[in-house]
Each structure stands twice: as structure tokens, then as C-alpha cells.
Image (cartoon, rainbow, N blue to C red):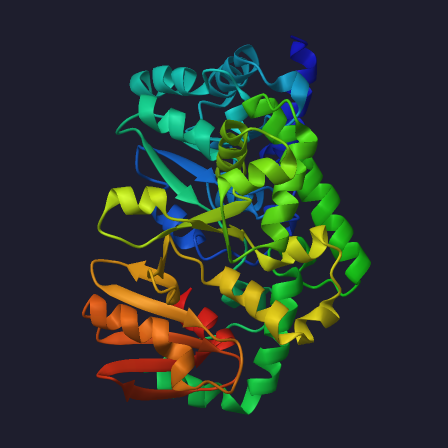
Length: 431
């Protein structure tokens, strides 16, 4: 371990220690993710804060924003993204250097999941001192393991890709919601075309803060593929989970991008990719734990039914699929394709499909069931609502949501109150 090199990195990572510099002029974005307020509120509590999420969604920026609001020499930031730094000795050295030289309290460690037994190191310091750890990781499984060994000591927060409201805020338009759904819709009507256009922009490039204002389609695709996907799929996942068949992993992810919102069967994927079913199951889990895909199960009160029935696969954000598949933004004018990726934005843990193949795209289960059907078009007839109405009758639901392209109305159909809400408005209201 080259101690001088590590000290040099520590000093480079922590410009806030230099009292000759104006902290207000530091290169830290003013825009804050929605989760910032919650983190700021809990910064004074003893528990370790663990921030998880995909690469480039803003975890490091969040840490530096928190640091900028704390006393100048009370914090240390260190990133373990560099391969040579990913060992326990470096972590211990960084902690001891900070405590011995600054006697500070707040320790911010980025990408800590690369350190073997990081949880054991933090636990020893946590139990013997008064320091506060704020950590981040791009792999859910590793942080989850830490949660198990740090029971009662760790609070985990997930930072997803940008939501539509955050995307608009980054573009200089902060949306303030007041009143009922109808009142919000009517207040936004004068700018309806703006919201529709921005929603298309959001679908195409809205996952990552750094490209929210970018207009060059080729650059957007290259950014997502090179800086996010190749790093995660070809480096991070194989290193963390010991992947043997990188090509199969990438092909599986391309499938998730192309078939997002569709049903899938592991046995079919096994035959298509020429990989055994156990490997397919593991690779799906790794993609999920790396925040690249979501998998939705059939809603049922029977666990056996959930396991037996087909599942749906979703890419974590439409913009990633568009980049991987080299889709042009013009393809959003194709109603069927646009609808497929709009549904991706509304994916939940459950969907519903009956024996007669009646379907509901998403089931929200927060103690009270709420069916959500995506019909990304303006002409919707009662036949299009058959699955939603069947589900509502079977599970005694009094309300449902229909996501549309342009249509807004609230009406009662077969004793169920249906809210027909444009996708852009629903993303603003419910995120």
C-alpha cells in the first residue's frame, strides 16, 4: 500500500479542507434530487446511511452536496472506484488518517461495496466511536449483505434514475402541485404542449442528470452505452458476481431492452441464448441487483401461483433501451412502441393476468389495491378496459387509473371510478 499516494488522493478528494478556497464557488450542482431532504434530515442520527443506485444517477453529487452544508473539516470523502484501492487496508488507513488528523465526525465513502468485509470494518468503528458513516454502492446485493451484518446500524436509501418532475427541474421548470388531480391538470393546460414535448424528451434521455440538457442523439446514446452500460455489464457485474459468459449477460440485457413490458419465460430464454436455466435465473438476478431491470410477478394471494405464472421484464428506464437498441427519438411517434416504453415507467411489483388472458399492466398494493392500465392513445373504448374492470370486480376495487396519451377525464364505469390521466401528468402527480 502506497501511503503517500493514498494521502494525495485524500487531499484531492477533499478540497473543502483548503481554507483559502471559497466553498460557495465549489463545482457542486445547485439541483438536488428529491431524496436530498430526507438524507439531510437524517444526517445527525447515528445510523449509517447507505445510498444505493445505478451508476451516474447522482449518488456522488448527493454526498458532496451534504458535505458542502457541514462544517469544513468535519467531513472526509473518499471513492473506492479505482481498482488499486479496493482492499480493507486502504479503508482502515483512510479512516485512521481522518480521525488522527482532523478528529472529524462525517465519513463519506463512495462505491464501498468493492471493499471485502467493509461492513466488518465499519461496525468496529461504529461501535467504539461517535462518527457518522454515509456510504454508497452500485450493487444492491453487497449493500444488502452489509445490512444483515449491520442490523440496526444501517439505513438504506435507493436513488433511482431521474423522475419526470426532477427532469423538468433540471431543465429549469419546477412544478408545484396544488389541489386535486383535476385542478392540477387544468392549471397546466396552458402549457400542455410543453409538458408533452418534455415527456418525450424524458423518455429518450431522462435517466441521468448529466445528459438532461443534451440534444445530440448520438452523444446521448454513446454516453449511456459507454459510461453506464459497458461499465456495469462488462466490468462491475462480472467482477462482483464472477460472471463467466459476458456475451450472454449482455444479450440477456438487450432482450430486456427490446421486450420491456412483455412476458417472458426462463426456459425460452435458455433456448434462445443457449445457456442453462440456472444461469439465466442468476443473470436476471444480477441485472436486477445492479438496478438495470425490474421484474414483475402475477398478482395472486397464492405464492405458488406467483412462482408458476409467467413474469414481466422491464428495463429500468426507457432511455437505456433506446440507447442500447440504437433507436432514434422519432420512433416515439410510433404509438405501439411508445406505449411499450411508457408502460415501463409505471411498472410495479405486480401485474395481473387471468386464465382468460385478461390483463392489468400494474397493480399497486399499499394495503389497498389500485389497478393501473396503460393505454397510450387517445381513443379508448370499454373493450380496452376489460382487464381492469375484471380485476376490480374480482378484488372489489372501487378505483382504477388508465394512463393515456392525451385524454383526461374521470368517470364511473361498472361502479368503478376510473381516472383517465395523460402519462406526463401521472408521472408528475405520482412520483
